[in-house]
Image 1 (cartoon, rainbow, N blue to C red):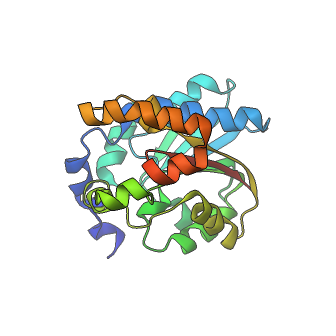
Image 2: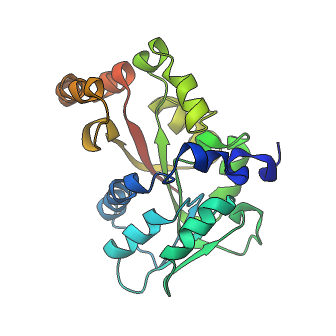
Image 3: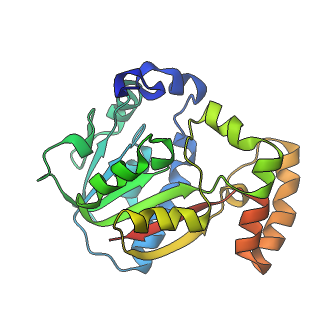
Length: 234
């Protein structure tokens, strides 16, 4: 399938995800800024590969030093149209694939936030992205867990949000290392605990999940799911 034929270009993805996950963007931006701050990164330019509607970059622009330049790259015409309303003198968006651009286009920080689980050739994607910045930040959904397997949630996610690659913490980190990255830092992000839940079942599940996570985070993630991994790499 070509990029032009993908669900991200035809409008199918927007039809299934009406706000292109804008509502989650402040939470994601907060976690991105957390990993940047705790590693004391120095930067002046930030890009996001697969920036969607651009809200993450907008939220980061409120947190990062004045004068920081942001650029977002997106292959979906629908998402690009949504992003244009967020553009200003410090934030620019492009309807193109950064990884197919001139290799001289580089940044201090490059991000792929909930992206390479959608990519057919995730290894090729990661190898191409590696040289685009000194620091790389990834947010990776951890779809493989006992709960998701028993309830067939992996196939639900495949149909609704287009995930075609599935990870545990260990396989996510190994995938980055196998494609040449040096892991600097990582931590779990808990959307199941920190973002609003829509159903009564998910609201009730929050309490045992939170209790267990405080005791043994790795086991909780593998049993219950509802977590992602924020990773900083070189």
